[in-house]
Every structure is written in C-alpha cells, then in structure tokens.
Image (cartoon, rainbow, N blue to C red):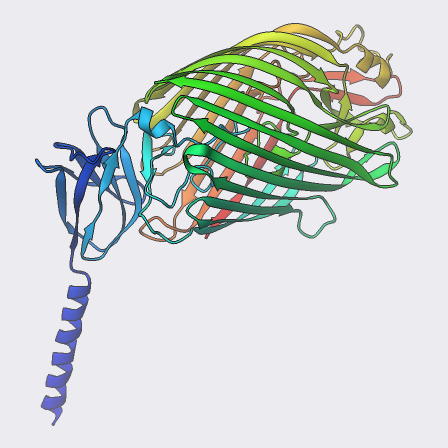
Amino acid sequence: MTRRVQLVAFLVLIALSNCAISWAAPGSVSGQVRDSGGVPQIGAEVQLLRPDLTVLADVYTDSTGRYSISSVLPGRYAVKAMGAWFLPSLRENVRVHTNTIVNLTLNTLYEAMQWLPAEPRTGNARQDDWAWTLRSAANRPLLRWLEDGPLVVVSDETGTHPRLKARLVATGQQGAFGESGERITAAVEETPSNSRELLARVDFAPGTDAGMESMLGFRQDLGFAGSVQSVAAVAIHPEIAADGADGLDEAAIRSWETIHLGDEFEAEVGSNQVLARFSSPSSGTVAELLPFASAGWRDGNSAIRYRMTTFLPGSHNSEDTEARSWLPALSSRDGNLTIEHGLHQELGWERRTNLSGAALLVFADRIDNPVIEAMGHFAADDTSSAAVLLDPISGLLHVAGPQFSTAGMAASFEHRLPGGNHLRLSYANGDALVLSAISSPLPSESLAQVLASATPRRAQTYALSLSGTLDGTGTRWRASYRWQPEDTITPVASFVTNAAEPYLSLRLNQPIHLSRDGWGGFDALINVSNLLAQGYRPYLLSDGSLLIFAQGQRSIRAGLAFNF
C-alpha cells in the first residue's frame, strides 16, 4: 500500500513538472515589415528588445519583408525595425506567449512629421516616458525621443485598451517661491479612446495648511486637421502675504487649437485666462486675457515659423504636467497685486535631422510688471515688506519692476552624441533689468530707492546643456550652465523657449524596478538649480533689512515617484 502511494505521488510530481515545463516553453515573434505604401522591405533590421530597451535578438527580413525570431521566453518585450532612409519604428508592450505576430511600418521623417502635435508651451519643460504628450492607441506614426536616445516612430497595437496610469510623488523642496517644504503629488492619466487624453493632478503639503495646486488637462486629436487642448490650473498659497492681506489664490484656463493644412502648413491659436486675488482681507482682484498664436511652413527638414504670445508662466523650469507651468507670474507694486505679461513677436528658422538641429530667430518684446525676485531678511520693525509679495516660509519675495521694451536674437544648436547623449548650445541677446552698483557697504538706501535704480540694459547669455542615460543603471541625467552678467536680475529674452536654468543646474532620475520585466517600481528624483549660488546682489537697507536679489535663487528638490 505504501509503495502504491509513493508511485502515485511520483507520477503526480512528473505531471506537475511537465506542466511547468510546457508553461515555460519558449515561443516566437514573427511578422512583416512594410513602408507606408504597403511595399515589403527587404533586408530591414528587426530587433527584439527587453523592457529596458536592451537588445535581446537581431535578425533581417527576407525577400518578402518577413522575419522570425524563435526561442523567445514568455514575457513582455518591444520590437524595433530599422531600414535605410527610414526612421526606426518601435512597437512597445508586446506580450509573447507562444507564436506572436508583430507587423511593423517604416516611415520617413517627412511622412511622420504630419502627426507631430503642437510644440510644448516651453521647450525646456522636459517630457518623460510617463507624460501624456506623444501617444496614440491607433497604428499611426508618432515621433518620440527614447530617453535621450534615437528618434523613433512609436506605434501601439491596433485595438489596444485605453491606458490608465497613476503616479504618486513625495518630494521635499527648499529655495523656491511658494514651493518650500514637503510635498505630496498624486496624478492620474487616462486615454479613454484612440483620440482623447486626460490628465488630472493635485499637489499639497501634508499635515499643514500650506498651499495646494491642482490641474486638469484634456486633449482631443482631430487627425489630419490637428487637435484641440485645454488645461485648467488652480493654486492656493495661504502663507503668501502682502500689505496686510494673507493668502494668495490664482487660477488659469488655457485653451488652444492646432491646425494642419496639408503637410507643409501648421498653425496654433489660443488664449490664457488668468485670475489672481488675496483670500482675506481682499485687496483687489486682477484678471487678464492673454492670447497667443503661431504659424509655420515646413519644407522637408527645414521650417519657418512666426509666433506671438502675451503670456509668461510663473515657473519656467517645471514640467507641463505641473500646475505651476500654466499659472501666471505674480508680484506686487506698491502693495497691489500684478500679473507679469507683455507682447512677444518672433520670426524664426529651424532645421532638424535625426542627429542634429539648429534654430535662429529674431524677436521684439514689451514686458509689463517684470518679476524681480529676492531673498529677504527683514528687521523686526521693518514695514517695507508690505510693498512686496512675501513668502515667509522660504524667505523669498516678488516685486514688480519697471516696464521695458527690447529686441534681440537667439540661436541654438543641438547634436546627438555617441552613447545616446545629447548636447545643446544656445545664445541670446536682448535687454534685462539690472540694479545700480553698491556704492558703499553702509546701509543708506530704502527698498523703494533700490527698486527705483532698476533699469534695462543690453546683455548676452550663453548656455551649455548635456543630457543622457547611463548604461547599466538606467540613470537619466541632465546638466546645464547658463551664464549672463551677474548684475542682471531678470532673464535675457524672457519669452524665448528652450532656455536653460540660470547658472549651474543638475537633474537626476534613477528608476528602481521591482520586477524582472522592468515594469512598475519607483524613481528617485533630484533637481538642483543654481548650485553655486551665482548672480546674487546683496543690499543692506537703511532700516537694517538685508535683501539678496538674483535672477535665479539656489533651490533643491528631491523625492520619490511611485508609478502604477
């Protein structure tokens, strides 16, 4: 009897082992590579990639454009096709069980360019893989940079389910106006159909009555015609005060439409409706309607574009998925709340290829209520702080400078370096506000006298940016240095996009995966601005207060981002 039981148990173990072996049996990935006209591509290179985009297998298509990769373990992969005179095509999130068929389409840069969405609000706002800017649930070409790697055409499997993603970010920040202290950010992104995208985000300080920010973004793709987009952002800052009024509330609604007329012409038109007021006691409400528009003509890799805008964002260094990117820059003039805005017109030329890009533009600006930022250490009996917009937590203050007009030019050059790194050089000239030189170390001036000395002056700025991804660790990094004369307290060419942060800045993003296939997990984040604290202009006032003016205060932001 005992032997029979042992024999049965042995047979059960063999059966279970066979089931496990059959479950883990390798499969295959095969398909056909064609161009946009349906012509099979002979000799096209096809790569099977792991989730971290490292190469697992490499084959070539036959005389009918077909390929086959065998002995592939079940899991999640990406498939990439490359051919002469074509942009690489990438299919992500391919689930391999047994025999999986993946057909790919190769497109030229000219063919794919018509699917590009409107340019971001600010070119320096980085778009990570989690952002919702370039994505489609249909099998159509969309351009994307692969984590500072090559430019590829990305497509999803036709008929895939809508995507829902969530992110929870815990950060600590110091040295930024209205943003100091611990912060918790929750964001949810959804693509409810092939042509719609939705993003909701809320940011708050836990365990305190400090400020809160939230935003809601929506995009409707209209195919060849273009797209329509709307973003609503709200921020509440109960700690900010001015002239006896406590609590600053601000809101903005941005709506715009992108229009494509054939493959060569594109246009964008929209407006920002902004509103700001103090909570209690109220000292008035300010509101502005700030329109913008652009038009461009493209011929192959080159383009000519005209742009007009009246809106200046409150934060030039944040991402488009953050509320502060869409809110106005606020300051105070004689205790009254003001919104920074103006009129910017530019005419530019650019040329871009897979490896490099160059741009040149000329502009004419008028800037109203330019924001001057300083770090304040006020005396106990000081009353000059009533004339500024003050954040007592960070010690930073905003005050409006004199209106001025300027004209200038800006140029940039970008190049993809070996190893997936990216180099960018830029130059600009124009007017910026400067303060008079300190004539004596003894306190002799009031705040009003110091601000009255602010005048526009011609200046130049140079910037160098390097970015890339470290092999093996997957660390995404970016380092930049932007120089302009240290006595300038506002940016040169304030409206120009793609501007680096003032002086030396560093940004690191270290993904930490919890699963073997690279999905899920969290990112460690760190972002340091003006690391060397350059450009500081200290003034000791007659009442004993110390003000340190700078176009960019040193700040640090670090934390963890959990992705779901």
